[in-house]
Image (cartoon, rainbow, N blue to C red; front, side, top):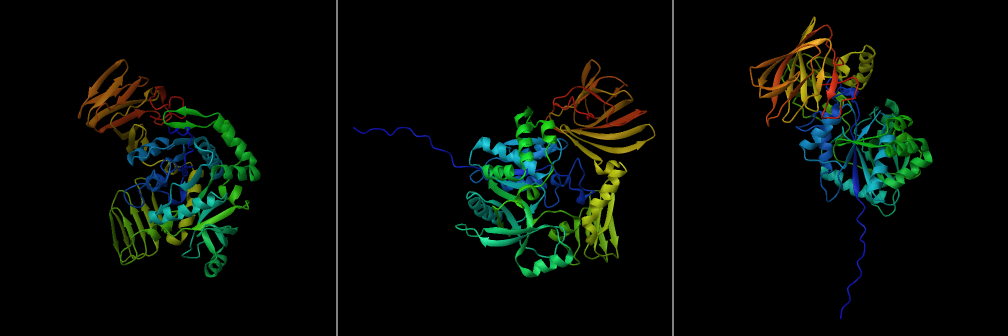
Length: 492
Protein backbone atom coordinates (compact mmCIF):
# COMPACT_ATOMS: atom_id res chain seq x y z
CA UNK A 1 0.00 0.00 0.00
CA UNK A 2 1.62 3.24 -1.10
CA UNK A 3 2.01 6.06 1.34
CA UNK A 4 1.44 9.69 0.29
CA UNK A 5 4.31 12.10 0.79
CA UNK A 6 3.59 14.73 3.44
CA UNK A 7 2.65 18.09 1.99
CA UNK A 8 5.60 20.41 1.78
CA UNK A 9 5.63 24.19 1.60
CA UNK A 10 7.22 25.24 -1.68
CA UNK A 11 9.01 28.55 -1.34
CA UNK A 12 8.24 30.74 -4.36
CA UNK A 13 11.05 31.82 -6.65
CA UNK A 14 12.35 35.20 -5.44
CA UNK A 15 10.69 37.83 -7.59
CA UNK A 16 12.44 40.48 -9.65
CA UNK A 17 10.55 43.67 -8.81
CA UNK A 18 10.94 46.73 -11.06
CA UNK A 19 11.18 50.02 -9.16
CA UNK A 20 10.19 52.90 -11.42
CA UNK A 21 11.38 56.31 -10.22
CA UNK A 22 8.82 58.75 -11.61
CA UNK A 23 9.02 61.87 -9.50
CA UNK A 24 11.62 64.05 -11.27
CA UNK A 25 11.12 67.52 -12.76
CA UNK A 26 13.20 67.37 -15.98
CA UNK A 27 14.22 71.04 -15.94
CA UNK A 28 16.66 70.71 -18.83
CA UNK A 29 13.80 69.92 -21.23
CA UNK A 30 11.94 73.13 -20.43
CA UNK A 31 9.66 74.54 -21.87
CA UNK A 32 8.11 71.19 -22.88
CA UNK A 33 8.80 69.71 -19.43
CA UNK A 34 7.21 71.54 -16.48
CA UNK A 35 7.18 70.79 -12.76
CA UNK A 36 3.55 69.66 -12.85
CA UNK A 37 3.95 67.89 -16.20
CA UNK A 38 7.58 66.72 -16.39
CA UNK A 39 9.33 64.93 -19.22
CA UNK A 40 8.46 61.39 -18.13
CA UNK A 41 4.80 62.17 -18.93
CA UNK A 42 5.58 63.38 -22.46
CA UNK A 43 5.75 61.39 -25.70
CA UNK A 44 9.20 62.61 -26.77
CA UNK A 45 9.97 59.51 -28.83
CA UNK A 46 7.07 57.75 -30.54
CA UNK A 47 3.46 57.75 -29.40
CA UNK A 48 3.89 56.74 -25.76
CA UNK A 49 5.25 58.76 -22.88
CA UNK A 50 8.62 57.89 -21.37
CA UNK A 51 7.04 56.46 -18.21
CA UNK A 52 4.73 54.27 -20.30
CA UNK A 53 7.69 52.96 -22.29
CA UNK A 54 9.56 52.29 -19.05
CA UNK A 55 6.67 50.33 -17.53
CA UNK A 56 6.20 48.27 -20.70
CA UNK A 57 9.85 47.15 -20.63
CA UNK A 58 8.93 45.21 -17.50
CA UNK A 59 5.47 44.04 -18.57
CA UNK A 60 6.46 40.37 -19.03
CA UNK A 61 5.11 38.80 -15.82
CA UNK A 62 7.09 35.62 -16.44
CA UNK A 63 10.24 37.73 -15.88
CA UNK A 64 9.13 40.53 -13.59
CA UNK A 65 6.66 41.17 -10.79
CA UNK A 66 4.33 44.15 -11.01
CA UNK A 67 6.32 47.38 -10.56
CA UNK A 68 6.68 49.58 -7.53
CA UNK A 69 6.26 53.16 -8.74
CA UNK A 70 7.64 56.08 -6.71
CA UNK A 71 6.20 59.44 -7.70
CA UNK A 72 5.12 62.82 -6.34
CA UNK A 73 1.90 64.44 -5.20
CA UNK A 74 1.76 66.83 -8.13
CA UNK A 75 1.63 64.20 -10.89
CA UNK A 76 0.14 61.20 -9.09
CA UNK A 77 -3.16 61.09 -10.97
CA UNK A 78 -1.51 61.56 -14.37
CA UNK A 79 1.00 58.79 -13.63
CA UNK A 80 -1.86 56.49 -12.59
CA UNK A 81 -3.86 57.35 -15.73
CA UNK A 82 -0.90 56.79 -18.04
CA UNK A 83 -0.09 53.40 -16.51
CA UNK A 84 -3.72 52.36 -16.73
CA UNK A 85 -3.76 53.37 -20.41
CA UNK A 86 -1.07 50.74 -21.15
CA UNK A 87 -2.61 48.10 -18.86
CA UNK A 88 0.10 48.23 -16.20
CA UNK A 89 -1.21 47.69 -12.66
CA UNK A 90 1.51 48.66 -10.14
CA UNK A 91 2.28 46.68 -7.03
CA UNK A 92 2.09 50.07 -5.30
CA UNK A 93 2.04 53.74 -6.25
CA UNK A 94 4.11 55.40 -3.53
CA UNK A 95 3.95 59.17 -3.00
CA UNK A 96 7.07 60.98 -1.82
CA UNK A 97 6.01 63.84 0.49
CA UNK A 98 9.09 65.82 -0.62
CA UNK A 99 11.99 65.15 -2.96
CA UNK A 100 14.98 63.67 -1.15
CA UNK A 101 16.96 62.12 -4.00
CA UNK A 102 17.07 58.54 -5.19
CA UNK A 103 18.57 56.89 -2.09
CA UNK A 104 15.55 57.45 0.22
CA UNK A 105 13.14 56.53 -2.58
CA UNK A 106 14.93 53.25 -3.28
CA UNK A 107 15.17 52.52 0.45
CA UNK A 108 11.36 52.70 0.63
CA UNK A 109 11.09 50.43 -2.43
CA UNK A 110 13.53 47.89 -0.97
CA UNK A 111 11.60 47.73 2.31
CA UNK A 112 8.35 47.19 0.39
CA UNK A 113 10.01 44.52 -1.75
CA UNK A 114 11.04 42.61 1.39
CA UNK A 115 7.39 42.53 2.40
CA UNK A 116 6.76 40.61 -0.82
CA UNK A 117 9.68 38.16 -0.43
CA UNK A 118 12.77 38.06 1.84
CA UNK A 119 15.02 37.38 -1.15
CA UNK A 120 13.44 39.84 -3.59
CA UNK A 121 15.67 41.42 -6.22
CA UNK A 122 14.84 44.94 -7.36
CA UNK A 123 15.58 46.67 -10.67
CA UNK A 124 15.79 50.44 -10.27
CA UNK A 125 14.75 52.22 -13.46
CA UNK A 126 14.33 55.97 -13.91
CA UNK A 127 11.09 56.70 -15.76
CA UNK A 128 12.58 59.27 -18.13
CA UNK A 129 15.14 57.19 -20.06
CA UNK A 130 14.88 55.90 -23.61
CA UNK A 131 15.98 52.37 -24.56
CA UNK A 132 15.63 51.24 -28.16
CA UNK A 133 16.52 47.53 -27.85
CA UNK A 134 14.41 45.96 -25.10
CA UNK A 135 15.66 42.46 -25.89
CA UNK A 136 19.24 43.61 -25.28
CA UNK A 137 18.11 45.20 -22.00
CA UNK A 138 16.54 41.91 -20.87
CA UNK A 139 19.71 40.00 -21.73
CA UNK A 140 21.78 42.45 -19.65
CA UNK A 141 19.23 42.21 -16.84
CA UNK A 142 19.63 38.42 -16.74
CA UNK A 143 23.36 38.89 -16.15
CA UNK A 144 22.78 41.63 -13.58
CA UNK A 145 20.25 39.54 -11.63
CA UNK A 146 22.70 36.62 -11.49
CA UNK A 147 25.38 38.94 -10.09
CA UNK A 148 22.94 40.55 -7.66
CA UNK A 149 22.04 37.13 -6.26
CA UNK A 150 25.70 36.77 -5.29
CA UNK A 151 25.29 39.79 -3.03
CA UNK A 152 26.61 42.40 -5.46
CA UNK A 153 25.09 45.82 -6.12
CA UNK A 154 24.97 46.10 -9.89
CA UNK A 155 24.74 49.11 -12.14
CA UNK A 156 24.69 49.27 -15.94
CA UNK A 157 27.56 50.87 -17.81
CA UNK A 158 27.08 52.48 -21.21
CA UNK A 159 29.93 52.34 -23.76
CA UNK A 160 30.67 56.03 -24.43
CA UNK A 161 30.19 57.34 -27.95
CA UNK A 162 31.66 60.79 -27.33
CA UNK A 163 33.65 62.66 -24.65
CA UNK A 164 30.51 63.63 -22.70
CA UNK A 165 31.00 66.00 -19.76
CA UNK A 166 27.39 65.78 -18.53
CA UNK A 167 27.57 62.17 -17.29
CA UNK A 168 29.32 60.38 -14.46
CA UNK A 169 31.66 57.54 -15.45
CA UNK A 170 32.84 54.25 -13.97
CA UNK A 171 35.99 52.23 -14.58
CA UNK A 172 35.67 48.50 -15.18
CA UNK A 173 37.68 46.16 -13.00
CA UNK A 174 38.02 42.37 -12.95
CA UNK A 175 35.24 40.07 -14.09
CA UNK A 176 32.77 38.67 -11.56
CA UNK A 177 33.52 35.01 -10.88
CA UNK A 178 30.82 32.75 -12.26
CA UNK A 179 28.88 35.51 -14.05
CA UNK A 180 30.05 36.09 -17.61
CA UNK A 181 29.49 39.68 -18.70
CA UNK A 182 29.61 41.24 -15.21
CA UNK A 183 32.57 43.21 -13.85
CA UNK A 184 33.62 44.73 -10.59
CA UNK A 185 33.64 48.53 -10.52
CA UNK A 186 37.21 49.72 -10.05
CA UNK A 187 36.26 53.37 -9.53
CA UNK A 188 33.56 55.97 -10.05
CA UNK A 189 34.37 59.28 -11.72
CA UNK A 190 32.41 62.50 -11.26
CA UNK A 191 31.34 64.49 -14.31
CA UNK A 192 34.72 65.25 -15.92
CA UNK A 193 36.03 68.26 -17.78
CA UNK A 194 36.45 67.98 -21.56
CA UNK A 195 40.13 66.94 -21.44
CA UNK A 196 39.57 64.10 -18.98
CA UNK A 197 36.45 62.94 -20.83
CA UNK A 198 38.50 62.74 -24.04
CA UNK A 199 41.25 60.79 -22.27
CA UNK A 200 38.79 58.31 -20.78
CA UNK A 201 37.15 57.80 -24.16
CA UNK A 202 40.54 56.93 -25.69
CA UNK A 203 41.48 54.67 -22.78
CA UNK A 204 38.56 52.29 -23.31
CA UNK A 205 38.10 51.28 -19.65
CA UNK A 206 35.62 53.97 -18.61
CA UNK A 207 31.87 53.83 -19.25
CA UNK A 208 28.94 56.15 -18.67
CA UNK A 209 26.94 55.54 -15.51
CA UNK A 210 23.36 54.81 -16.61
CA UNK A 211 21.63 55.44 -13.28
CA UNK A 212 19.94 52.01 -13.47
CA UNK A 213 20.61 49.41 -10.77
CA UNK A 214 19.92 45.79 -9.81
CA UNK A 215 20.42 44.39 -6.32
CA UNK A 216 18.87 42.21 -3.69
CA UNK A 217 16.64 44.36 -1.52
CA UNK A 218 18.20 42.96 1.67
CA UNK A 219 21.78 43.45 0.38
CA UNK A 220 21.06 47.07 -0.56
CA UNK A 221 19.51 47.84 2.83
CA UNK A 222 22.49 46.25 4.60
CA UNK A 223 24.89 48.51 2.68
CA UNK A 224 22.64 51.51 3.32
CA UNK A 225 22.78 50.71 7.05
CA UNK A 226 26.60 50.72 6.84
CA UNK A 227 27.05 53.88 4.82
CA UNK A 228 23.92 56.04 5.31
CA UNK A 229 22.02 54.79 8.39
CA UNK A 230 20.04 58.02 8.78
CA UNK A 231 18.41 57.44 5.40
CA UNK A 232 17.43 53.89 6.32
CA UNK A 233 15.98 54.87 9.71
CA UNK A 234 13.94 57.65 8.11
CA UNK A 235 12.66 55.27 5.44
CA UNK A 236 11.60 52.71 8.06
CA UNK A 237 9.80 55.35 10.13
CA UNK A 238 8.04 56.89 7.15
CA UNK A 239 6.89 53.48 5.94
CA UNK A 240 5.70 52.52 9.42
CA UNK A 241 3.40 55.55 9.32
CA UNK A 242 2.02 54.80 5.84
CA UNK A 243 -1.62 55.35 4.96
CA UNK A 244 -3.69 54.31 1.95
CA UNK A 245 -5.34 57.02 -0.15
CA UNK A 246 -7.39 55.69 -3.07
CA UNK A 247 -4.82 53.78 -5.17
CA UNK A 248 -1.84 55.54 -3.56
CA UNK A 249 0.41 54.74 -0.62
CA UNK A 250 1.23 57.83 1.42
CA UNK A 251 4.36 57.90 3.57
CA UNK A 252 4.62 59.66 6.91
CA UNK A 253 5.63 63.14 5.81
CA UNK A 254 7.47 64.19 8.98
CA UNK A 255 9.59 61.05 9.08
CA UNK A 256 10.42 61.15 5.38
CA UNK A 257 11.24 64.86 5.52
CA UNK A 258 13.93 64.20 8.14
CA UNK A 259 15.90 62.01 5.73
CA UNK A 260 19.15 63.39 4.32
CA UNK A 261 18.86 64.13 0.61
CA UNK A 262 21.21 61.93 -1.39
CA UNK A 263 21.51 59.81 -4.51
CA UNK A 264 22.11 56.05 -4.61
CA UNK A 265 25.51 56.74 -6.14
CA UNK A 266 26.77 59.01 -3.35
CA UNK A 267 25.03 57.26 -0.45
CA UNK A 268 25.97 53.68 -1.35
CA UNK A 269 27.50 52.82 -4.73
CA UNK A 270 30.63 54.96 -4.40
CA UNK A 271 31.25 53.70 -0.85
CA UNK A 272 30.46 50.00 -1.05
CA UNK A 273 33.02 47.30 -1.82
CA UNK A 274 30.30 45.25 -3.52
CA UNK A 275 29.74 47.40 -6.63
CA UNK A 276 29.57 45.60 -9.96
CA UNK A 277 28.48 46.55 -13.45
CA UNK A 278 27.10 45.03 -16.64
CA UNK A 279 27.76 46.75 -19.98
CA UNK A 280 24.49 47.73 -21.65
CA UNK A 281 24.36 48.08 -25.43
CA UNK A 282 20.66 48.72 -25.96
CA UNK A 283 20.38 52.20 -27.47
CA UNK A 284 20.21 53.86 -24.03
CA UNK A 285 19.71 57.60 -23.52
CA UNK A 286 18.74 59.58 -20.45
CA UNK A 287 17.08 62.18 -22.75
CA UNK A 288 18.66 64.70 -20.41
CA UNK A 289 18.90 67.69 -22.73
CA UNK A 290 17.62 68.92 -26.08
CA UNK A 291 20.98 68.03 -27.62
CA UNK A 292 20.48 64.42 -26.50
CA UNK A 293 17.01 64.31 -28.03
CA UNK A 294 18.51 65.56 -31.28
CA UNK A 295 21.15 62.80 -31.10
CA UNK A 296 18.62 59.97 -30.77
CA UNK A 297 15.99 61.38 -33.17
CA UNK A 298 15.58 60.64 -36.87
CA UNK A 299 17.08 63.45 -38.93
CA UNK A 300 16.75 64.64 -42.52
CA UNK A 301 19.58 64.91 -45.04
CA UNK A 302 20.64 68.22 -43.49
CA UNK A 303 20.81 66.81 -39.98
CA UNK A 304 17.56 68.40 -38.78
CA UNK A 305 15.18 66.66 -36.36
CA UNK A 306 11.65 68.05 -36.44
CA UNK A 307 8.36 67.49 -34.66
CA UNK A 308 5.13 69.40 -35.27
CA UNK A 309 4.28 72.04 -37.87
CA UNK A 310 7.82 72.96 -38.96
CA UNK A 311 9.26 74.37 -42.21
CA UNK A 312 13.01 74.85 -42.64
CA UNK A 313 15.01 76.62 -45.34
CA UNK A 314 18.81 76.55 -45.45
CA UNK A 315 18.96 75.15 -41.89
CA UNK A 316 21.36 72.45 -40.71
CA UNK A 317 21.75 70.27 -37.62
CA UNK A 318 18.79 71.79 -35.79
CA UNK A 319 16.19 70.33 -33.43
CA UNK A 320 12.76 71.95 -33.82
CA UNK A 321 9.82 70.97 -31.62
CA UNK A 322 6.57 72.89 -32.11
CA UNK A 323 3.56 71.90 -30.06
CA UNK A 324 1.13 74.28 -31.74
CA UNK A 325 1.80 76.97 -34.31
CA UNK A 326 3.80 76.93 -37.53
CA UNK A 327 7.51 77.35 -36.74
CA UNK A 328 10.03 78.27 -39.43
CA UNK A 329 13.82 78.53 -39.47
CA UNK A 330 15.94 80.22 -42.13
CA UNK A 331 19.71 80.22 -42.59
CA UNK A 332 20.72 78.86 -39.17
CA UNK A 333 22.69 75.93 -37.80
CA UNK A 334 23.04 73.93 -34.57
CA UNK A 335 19.98 75.32 -32.81
CA UNK A 336 17.36 73.85 -30.51
CA UNK A 337 14.05 75.63 -31.01
CA UNK A 338 11.14 74.54 -28.80
CA UNK A 339 7.73 76.22 -29.08
CA UNK A 340 4.80 75.73 -26.71
CA UNK A 341 1.58 77.69 -26.15
CA UNK A 342 3.17 80.07 -23.68
CA UNK A 343 6.95 79.94 -24.15
CA UNK A 344 9.69 79.69 -26.77
CA UNK A 345 13.23 78.42 -26.24
CA UNK A 346 16.03 79.14 -28.71
CA UNK A 347 19.37 77.66 -27.74
CA UNK A 348 22.67 76.69 -29.26
CA UNK A 349 22.62 72.88 -29.18
CA UNK A 350 26.03 72.88 -27.48
CA UNK A 351 24.53 74.93 -24.62
CA UNK A 352 21.52 72.67 -24.10
CA UNK A 353 22.78 71.40 -20.73
CA UNK A 354 22.49 74.97 -19.41
CA UNK A 355 18.72 75.23 -19.82
CA UNK A 356 18.48 74.46 -16.10
CA UNK A 357 20.24 77.79 -15.41
CA UNK A 358 17.55 79.57 -17.40
CA UNK A 359 14.85 77.72 -15.47
CA UNK A 360 16.48 78.76 -12.18
CA UNK A 361 16.16 82.41 -13.22
CA UNK A 362 12.52 81.90 -14.12
CA UNK A 363 11.91 80.31 -10.70
CA UNK A 364 13.48 83.32 -9.01
CA UNK A 365 11.04 85.52 -10.91
CA UNK A 366 8.11 83.29 -9.84
CA UNK A 367 7.14 82.64 -13.44
CA UNK A 368 4.19 80.24 -13.72
CA UNK A 369 5.69 78.90 -16.96
CA UNK A 370 8.08 76.84 -14.84
CA UNK A 371 5.21 75.12 -13.04
CA UNK A 372 2.41 74.59 -15.55
CA UNK A 373 1.53 74.47 -19.20
CA UNK A 374 -1.52 76.24 -20.55
CA UNK A 375 -3.01 72.76 -20.50
CA UNK A 376 -3.22 71.68 -16.84
CA UNK A 377 -4.03 68.05 -16.04
CA UNK A 378 -6.35 67.04 -13.24
CA UNK A 379 -7.72 63.64 -12.16
CA UNK A 380 -11.06 64.45 -13.81
CA UNK A 381 -9.52 65.58 -17.14
CA UNK A 382 -7.80 68.85 -17.96
CA UNK A 383 -8.29 72.57 -18.48
CA UNK A 384 -6.63 74.97 -20.88
CA UNK A 385 -6.22 78.71 -20.49
CA UNK A 386 -7.48 80.38 -23.68
CA UNK A 387 -7.51 84.10 -22.93
CA UNK A 388 -7.27 86.51 -20.02
CA UNK A 389 -7.76 90.21 -19.45
CA UNK A 390 -8.53 92.75 -16.76
CA UNK A 391 -11.00 91.05 -14.45
CA UNK A 392 -11.75 88.00 -16.60
CA UNK A 393 -10.28 84.83 -18.05
CA UNK A 394 -11.51 82.13 -20.41
CA UNK A 395 -10.78 78.42 -20.03
CA UNK A 396 -11.66 75.23 -21.82
CA UNK A 397 -12.50 72.31 -19.51
CA UNK A 398 -12.54 68.74 -20.79
CA UNK A 399 -13.97 66.16 -18.40
CA UNK A 400 -13.36 62.48 -19.05
CA UNK A 401 -16.14 59.87 -18.73
CA UNK A 402 -17.00 59.50 -15.06
CA UNK A 403 -15.00 62.60 -14.15
CA UNK A 404 -16.30 64.67 -11.26
CA UNK A 405 -14.90 68.01 -10.12
CA UNK A 406 -14.96 69.06 -6.47
CA UNK A 407 -18.09 70.42 -4.88
CA UNK A 408 -16.66 73.90 -4.37
CA UNK A 409 -17.24 77.61 -4.12
CA UNK A 410 -15.31 80.82 -4.82
CA UNK A 411 -15.39 84.12 -2.96
CA UNK A 412 -13.94 86.53 -5.53
CA UNK A 413 -15.27 85.35 -8.88
CA UNK A 414 -18.38 84.23 -10.69
CA UNK A 415 -18.34 81.68 -13.52
CA UNK A 416 -20.29 81.23 -16.74
CA UNK A 417 -20.32 77.72 -18.27
CA UNK A 418 -21.30 76.81 -21.83
CA UNK A 419 -21.17 73.19 -22.97
CA UNK A 420 -19.73 72.77 -26.47
CA UNK A 421 -19.51 68.97 -26.70
CA UNK A 422 -21.14 66.16 -24.74
CA UNK A 423 -23.52 66.35 -21.80
CA UNK A 424 -22.61 67.84 -18.42
CA UNK A 425 -24.30 67.32 -15.08
CA UNK A 426 -24.18 70.60 -13.18
CA UNK A 427 -24.86 71.42 -9.54
CA UNK A 428 -25.51 75.08 -8.66
CA UNK A 429 -26.64 75.70 -5.11
CA UNK A 430 -29.23 73.06 -4.23
CA UNK A 431 -30.15 72.26 -7.85
CA UNK A 432 -28.62 69.59 -10.10
CA UNK A 433 -29.45 69.46 -13.81
CA UNK A 434 -28.06 68.35 -17.20
CA UNK A 435 -26.55 70.68 -19.80
CA UNK A 436 -26.24 69.67 -23.46
CA UNK A 437 -24.19 71.34 -26.20
CA UNK A 438 -24.99 75.05 -26.63
CA UNK A 439 -26.57 75.25 -23.18
CA UNK A 440 -25.14 77.19 -20.26
CA UNK A 441 -25.21 77.89 -16.52
CA UNK A 442 -24.27 80.84 -14.30
CA UNK A 443 -22.50 80.35 -10.94
CA UNK A 444 -22.71 83.46 -8.72
CA UNK A 445 -19.93 84.43 -6.31
CA UNK A 446 -19.99 82.30 -3.16
CA UNK A 447 -22.39 79.67 -4.54
CA UNK A 448 -21.47 76.01 -4.16
CA UNK A 449 -21.24 74.19 -7.48
CA UNK A 450 -19.98 71.06 -9.17
CA UNK A 451 -19.37 69.80 -12.72
CA UNK A 452 -19.67 66.11 -13.65
CA UNK A 453 -19.60 63.91 -16.72
CA UNK A 454 -21.89 60.92 -16.15
CA UNK A 455 -21.67 59.75 -19.78
CA UNK A 456 -19.24 57.41 -21.53
CA UNK A 457 -17.91 60.17 -23.83
CA UNK A 458 -15.66 63.16 -23.26
CA UNK A 459 -17.42 66.40 -22.32
CA UNK A 460 -16.06 69.89 -23.09
CA UNK A 461 -17.25 73.29 -21.95
CA UNK A 462 -16.04 76.88 -22.06
CA UNK A 463 -15.73 78.63 -18.72
CA UNK A 464 -15.62 82.42 -18.39
CA UNK A 465 -14.48 83.66 -14.98
CA UNK A 466 -15.20 87.25 -13.90
CA UNK A 467 -14.04 88.87 -10.68
CA UNK A 468 -11.51 90.85 -8.72
CA UNK A 469 -9.19 87.85 -8.27
CA UNK A 470 -8.93 84.80 -10.54
CA UNK A 471 -6.19 82.69 -8.92
CA UNK A 472 -6.55 78.93 -8.52
CA UNK A 473 -6.33 79.32 -4.73
CA UNK A 474 -9.69 81.16 -4.50
CA UNK A 475 -11.52 77.92 -3.86
CA UNK A 476 -13.01 76.01 -0.96
CA UNK A 477 -13.60 72.29 -1.50
CA UNK A 478 -16.67 70.96 0.23
CA UNK A 479 -16.37 67.42 -1.17
CA UNK A 480 -13.95 65.64 -3.49
CA UNK A 481 -14.02 62.06 -4.77
CA UNK A 482 -10.24 62.12 -5.41
CA UNK A 483 -9.30 62.69 -1.75
CA UNK A 484 -8.02 66.23 -2.32
CA UNK A 485 -10.37 68.07 0.06
CA UNK A 486 -7.63 69.10 2.48
CA UNK A 487 -4.93 69.95 -0.07
CA UNK A 488 -3.60 73.53 -0.19
CA UNK A 489 -3.70 75.45 -2.37
CA UNK A 490 -6.85 73.82 -3.58
CA UNK A 491 -7.30 72.81 -7.19
CA UNK A 492 -10.46 72.12 -9.12
